[in-house]
Figure (cartoon, rainbow, N blue to C red):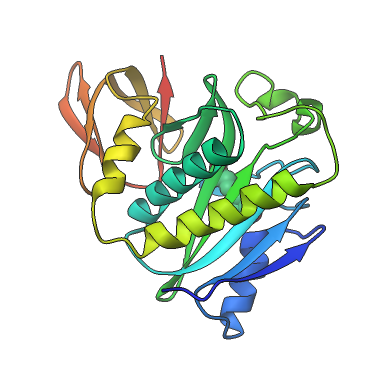
Amino acid sequence: MYKIDIDYFDEVTSTNEVLRQMALDGEEPGKTVVAWKQTAGRGRLGRTFESPRGGIYISMLLEADSSMTLTAKAGVAAKRAIEEITDRKVQIKWVNDILYKGRKVAGILAQGIGDLVVVGIGINFNTDLKALGPELKDSASSLYNSWEEPDSDSMDLVNSLVRHMYDLAGDSDQSWLREYRAASAVMGKKVRVFQAGRQTGSGVVTGIDDNCALHVLDEKKGEMILSTGEITIRLD
Ligand code: BTN
């Protein structure tokens, strides 16, 4: 059982970075940082994560698990929270993107610190799409688009997400994996696989195994089992 302790900030560089520093200073698992804006939000593969006002940016400190599993659990937690608090139905694009109507509305970044992990989740909740920049205009979206100050819905979403994430992290039962698979936006779909920016395969997704690795039946290579955080897939 985690003892959850949430700090709220109006604006930070990166909630992952703030929480990483807190962990180095001795904070314990359960510590959580929430901000309504980030000036240096971090994404996967060294990218930046655009984090304007209207979004919700959360980082949670947890005991280490396989980072693939924690990332996938974070996807399930985000889906549960979004569907509990809003009227939007979302899907999970392996391994860590949350899609609404086929566009990304949330991303997840897990970063290890010794035997702890910071799991960061950014949600485009009420985000003005113009504030995300032109390069995301075809791939990103927001759950809502009427920018307002953080309100009780934002707080409800934070509380629901935090509760689901810490519950799932302590859950050794595998039933959440069924939820993850059922929510998948890629199962049975044709995808292209990229590693270090280069296309390394293409084929149909045949499954997600118990370690959260993605199985793709490549037209030339046969079965590919994708399990590192350095892989990107694109839906055809
Ligand atoms: C990705 O989609 O590439 C991952 C994005 C993760 C963004 C979140 S927002 C909260 C936390 N703080 C960060 O700087 N990054 C994560």
